[in-house]
Structures are given as C-alpha cells and as structure tokens.
Length: 398
View 1: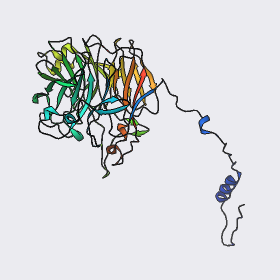
View 2: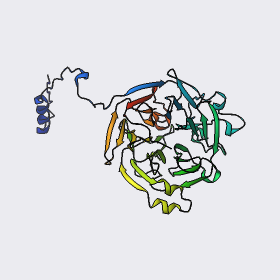
View 3: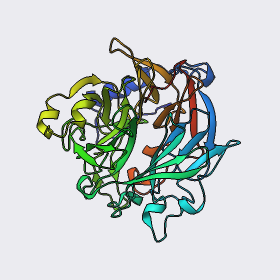
View 4: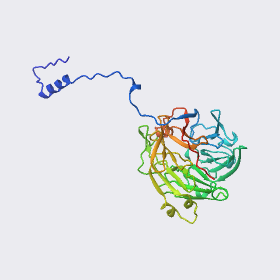
C-alpha cells in the first residue's frame, strides 16, 4: 500500500495526484500457464530425410552418381580439412579418390586438390571436381584452379583441365559447374565465378581442348545486387570483424542449372534474389562480345536468396532459399512453390538429383561462420545432408 506523506513545506501538485491515482487504478493482468508446445508456430513443409551428418569440416557440395554413390566436398575456408573431396560410405565421408590427392601442400598443384568447392557426377560415370585453388578465399594459386575428371569404375583421374590465365581474374572464385556432352567432340562446361569482389561472370570451357572464354563479366546478372540486404535467422547478414568493423555481403554468380535440352543456362548471384537465364548458344559463340550477350539475358524475377540451383528432366528448376530455411521449385508457369521448409534447413547450399527421384542438398550453417559474428563461431555441429522426394530424374546431359 502506498502511504503519501507531505511536509508542511511541500504541497503535492495535481499532476502528482493524477499519476498516483492512475497507477493505483491500473488492472493486474494474470499470466496464463501455457505449455509452449501447444502454441502456434511456423509450420514445416515437405518430408525432410537426413542422409548423413558431419561433425568435422563444413561441407558445401554434394552429388549423386547414376549408380547411387554419393560424393561431398569440404572447401578449405579455415576449418581443419583433412580431405577436401570425400565419398559417403556407410554414412561416413572418406577421402576420395585417395588421401594423397587430397593433400593441400605438395609439389605439383595440378595433381592435388587445393580447395574444392563443387563436385558433379555426370552421365558417363565420371566425377568432376572443381578446385578453386583459393583456400580461405585468398587469390587463387596460379595454375591451380582446375576441373578434374575421375572415372568412377577405376577411381582414377582421367582428365585435368587447368583454367587458362586469360579467364582467371585476381579475385576469381570458381564456384559451381554444369555439363553438356551434346556439344562439340567432348562436351562443354559452364562455370560460375562467384568472386567476393561482387564482380562475377560465367566461364565456358571446351572439354576437349581446354579452351575457355569468359562471358557476362561484371554484368548485372552475374554480379552482386548493390541493394541486396539479406536477413537470415532474423539478423542482417553482413561481415562483422572482431575489431568492430563491418562489410557488406557481396558475392557474385553462384548457383547454376542447365535445362534438359541444354539450350538454356539458369544462374544467380549469391547476393541477389533474382534468377537469370541465357541461351547457351550465345555463351559459346566466340564472335559475340559481352554487350551482345548481356542484351539477351532474361531476368526471370525473384525466387528468394539462393546458393545452389538444380534442374530436373522435366525442366523444373529448384533453388534454395537461405533466408527462409526452404527449398523451392519453379513450375512451367513460372510460379515458385515451396517444397521444403524446416528450421533444420540452415543455409541450403548445393543440390543434386539422384537416380532415386530425390533431391539431395547440404545445410551447412554458412551464415553462422565467425566472419559474420565478430569472430565468434556460431555454427553448431553436426552439419547435415538432407533429401526430399521430388519424383523426377536429373536433367540429361547427352
């Protein structure tokens, strides 16, 4: 109970009386006893299956071979990475194709994996390894960035294509790759450059000769959107250094997918919510300059913020949405539909369609790395490899 005392020398003002009266007249609100599990919450979508978990290095890429073999990779971004390419065997990743080729240091950089960002199994029973040669996102080691093909029957390297100097820029970070073996004598590869400078591009490689050309360098469609401000787990995603300084999240072209007929390439910058496409014949036409090709780029609108992309045999394009813990697909009408939404989908990265009708993808908590949180590592192991049934086959490449 309040007891008001006034001395003879002080007189309470009407305002003071009003304030006290208001306080005493305020009703008391009783808090109900509620079981938190009974309260409404964000719903999940789709049936998510856990294929494997990883308690050591952080994975990015995954691919499923026609035989069902699963391969993963672990870039050397700062974690302890004993091997950068692995095969899943009995639920555990083991070095592939050998311990020796996975050694970061050594003499011949063309015969070992320095830091692998992506692995892709093709329809000809080969595993292609995309080596950035850029550990810790440093400038790529000269002559080290390469595509390596491994015969899955013999588990031996059968081809190595080193990226020529004229397509490698000082901050080039080769990120993901798609193949089409219906073009040329040995096929062609399309590779995204996701430079942290924000200036990206697409590299087209003749798999027979190793000749390569850069396309759409610095184009709006391959570069970071300057207005893009991502929000992940309720927090604006920016670089936060331990000294208190900050930097924007500016990463160029990343996800890539090829239509079933090989005529259309889909791609997106990591720092963007838009999906773009371009005719592959234009990319391969050496007589066209950058502006000629840029004028033919199609902006397919917003799809959400994505890391990896994939396409199935029906022409459906799949995209992760790292802001919404989701996987989405683009239907034939251009509508985006969420097929998986789950709080466990913490930064969906690379995707691959297996021969079993499932879409496989990694969730690696990329946004929780120390560089985004003042040097504090907020990742919580394990990292995960998930799959969700889509009842579709991979897009053909031959």
